[in-house]
Every structure is written in C-alpha cells, then in structure tokens.
Image 1 (tube, rainbow, N blue to C red):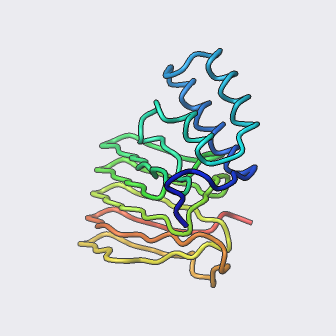
Image 2 (cartoon, rainbow, N blue to C red):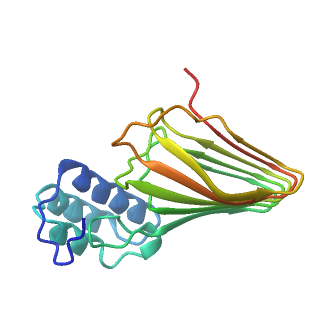
Image 3 (cartoon, rainbow, N blue to C red):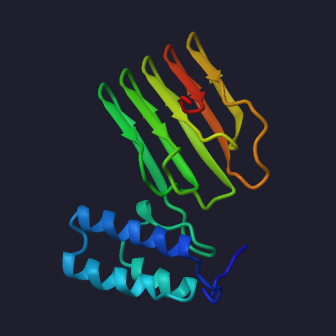
Length: 185
C-alpha cells in the first residue's frame, strides 16, 4: 500500500521503528541527545506517516524507514577479512547487501522488526561465510543464486506463515559458504 501524502494513521510498531532510527542516528552523532529526546517525544505522539517522516527527513536514506510511500534504504554489510554481524534488535530494510571476501557476515533476523512483506538479500561470498538466521514462519526463496566450488545450504524450508515476510536471496558464492537456517530451539 502506498501513501504518498502520508495521511494514513501510524501504528505503535511504526512509531517504534522511527524511535529506533532516531536512537541509531544519535549514536552515530547525527543528532544531539536533546534533539533525540524531542524527536522521540514527537514520535510517540505522531498520528500519521507524514508526522513520522518529518522526524527522519534530514537523516541519510541508508537508515531510512520503510513506511508506506517512504524510502526503504539499503543495509550494506561488507567485509574483506573481518567479521560483520547484524543481530539483536534492528529494523529490517527492504534491501540488504551482504558481501565478504574471506571474512564472515552474520545476519540474524530473530530479534529484528520487519514491516516489509518481502526483503531482498543480495549475497556475494568469495572464500568466506555468510550465515543468515530467520525466524520460524518466514519463507526463504533462493532466486538467481550461483556457486563455483562453494556451498549454498538453505535449511529454512518449512512452509512459511502467510503474513510473515519472504526473504528472497540472490547472488553468488565462490569457494565459501552461504547458509540459511532457523535459530536453535
């Protein structure tokens, strides 16, 4: 559903997404603590998507919200030899790029907030490893994913819940490993 004018009413979850983005922006030094407090107060009383968008309009699109009619942003997780992790509480954008040469990338969706029906993950792995953990109920589609001598393992194959997000995975794996699984019980 689109809402170009921002007239639709915001939900508690929408307000929570904005508040988390504001906290991240304050942690990055983009807004002061005073601005954070003021904007959180305004977010808690926001009635429409337009009210919420006004609170994040001066922040970069890379951390932009996926509210109807708004931007979605792209989360880029890249490493050559090190380790990158996205886990615990975070807000899932509609598009994620994960890339590693010989390092590792871990994306754990179990504590994340996802307001999208579909999320695109572009995974590129040389000799490293990409681990993706999705909550039970999510649907995972492998779409245009190729490998040379590496391994692609999708262990998240249970039927998805009709209202849960769909994770669509594309990309290529060289000598490394891409593994998608559910969290441990």
